[in-house]
Length: 111
Length: 119
Image 1: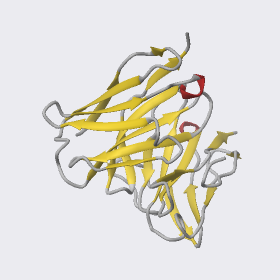
Image 2: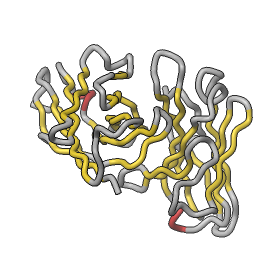
Image 3: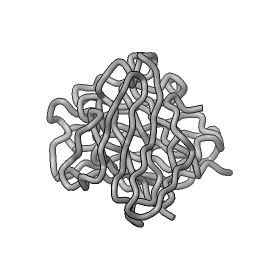
Image 4: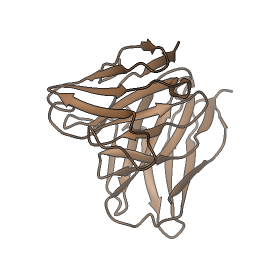
């Protein structure tokens, strides 16, 4: 069981917007603005999409955005494209016994 | 542009030690602020943080693996390494190395290397 809770799957049609939630505790998501999001296509390494809750690395489309409210962070993808179909993982710094916690991952299907 | 590349045996026998090396190119491993990390992914599963090492040698491990894991750094070779002792089939996974910024995010990642534990 992962420390952060994500929905197993989400889906949307091209052009639509979807949001993926990531729920933790006050020891991780809620306590620090150190949430990051990763995109992983099958057989590929994860790619950083969002860091520090809402910051986009250079080269990442502005269709990807992040936010946080309390113990839940969210990744929103607007204007869905076929290439967005992938697994998405959230991660956070944690002040508990383990420094880093990951979510279980969310499979995004573009219909 | 920093790049990372994992290397090591793809097959390890049960009870033996898994050893992997990550070679860093395009930047110095000694540069401050970075934590050099190992993360694994069991087949068809999610990501599991194994641990990381600061360039000075300070290490941080996942408590669930701490008794079997050692991460070390060789600044002269710009490499860092992972050792997992007493492996079982449950250690079969794709192992990634990654640079962690200030214990906040992982970027970039290596391409990953599949390690299978089997006799």
